[in-house]
Structure formats: C-alpha cells, structure tokens
Length: 286
Image (cartoon, rainbow, N blue to C red; front, top):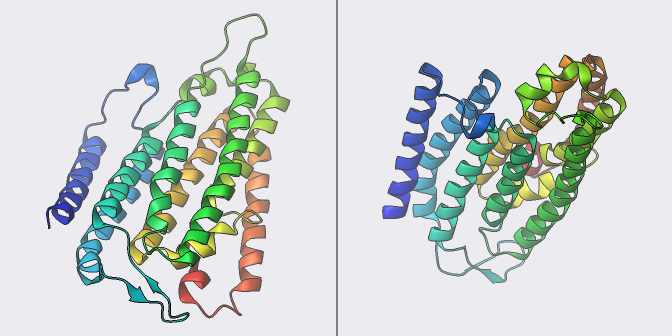
C-alpha cells in the first residue's frame, strides 16, 4: 500500500542524506545548536541503516499481520492490532526524533529530542492491542519519564556549573562548554553527570532501572524491538557521551569513566543472573 511505500522511500532517502552528510559535512545551524559531527554521525549512520532494514522487514510483517480480532494463544481472549496508519506514522516520527538526537549540540534540545523518542515509540510498543502490551507501554512511559526528569535536573545542574556568577554564562552547547571547560564548577559538573547517567541510563536500560526493557521488547513487534535495541538505546547513550565529552575537557574524565564501568558491570551481572532461567527469547535478549 501507499503507507508501506512511503515508509520504504523515507528510509532510503534518510540513508542517502546521511551518506551525503558524511561526504560533505553540512554547516552548523541555529547558531550551533544543530551540527553534524563525527560522534553524532556514527550514531546517525547506525540508526539510518537499521531503520532501512526495519522498513524492508515491515513490508512483509504488515502484510502478514491480520487486522481482524484474533484469540490470544495463551489466554484465549480476542485482541486486534492498531491501524497500520498509526504504526507507520509513529515509525516515521520515531526516525525524526532519533535523527534530531544525533545532530543536537545544545543539551536542552538534546533532552527534548530524547523525550520525543519516548513519546513516538510508546504507541509502537502497544501495536498489539493486548493487556500485556498496555502494561509494558505504561511501564516504559512511567520509568522513562522518571529518568528523563532526572536528566532535566542534570541540565539545570549543568547550567549552574556553567554560570559565571555575575559574568556571562557559557551556553549549554557542547563545543562552547568544551571550550570553556576550565571555568566550569567541578562539583556541580560531577552532580550533573550523575543525573545524566541515571536519567539517560534509565532510557538506555542500565541496571537497576532497566525493568521496563524486557517487557517492552517482548510485547513490541519484532521490527520495533530491533529499533529499540539498536537505535533508541544508542540515543540515550549519546546523551551520556555528550556529557562525558564536557567532563573530559574539564579534567573530570576519570570520574565519568569509573561510573560508566560500575553501571556497565552491574548491568552485566544482573543480566547473567536472569538469563539462564528465561524461556522467552525476546525477553532473554532484552
């Protein structure tokens, strides 16, 4: 149908535009708020390639999915899928939000873009109008909203760290903060990094705030699970890496590295405990 064609054409156009940006790096826009750099370009390339593969897979997936109510194989009650138009629109909004994340250099705009990925992807998790899907979607929204609120507080702390107490405050743009790193207030900067790590780490699926992830992945369609794993989590990770860039320039790189290692090892340990007893493959991978 035309919706599937639009999805595929958008994915192809996105890949071509991303390749063009890699070949000829575009000029910054909105006073440096939007900029294509090497770090963001890497994540944008991964997102673009994955979305193209997801769009190709979606053509067959949507063709096979029945629009009529059908019984649940486990509990027997009837449920129906969301309209294809809603699914396609949310996928395209999801791509737009993830693209904005990769080119955002202003921390406030980055926060808005990451929150937009949550709002665009929530209806995709609820594609199968099922009570388990609804539960997974609400868990995803509630936990990620708590995380995004902590990240917003981290933005406020970063603004305090960048304020000159009577002078001109440094704009919360990555390049400006890196350039003025020597003037940043170290305790406030460390506190901001912790809030960014916990806040965006919730969206990234770092333990112990990862509990939304197995439910969302197991209940979402396979194509959505792939985008959640391979692209959405990267967007949250990019937010943490942007903050780590500032910390490194300010001489606080070791502080951020140690925290990342601790949360990474904790996440691996939690996964190692639960994987052996998990029979659902999608939950096991999540």
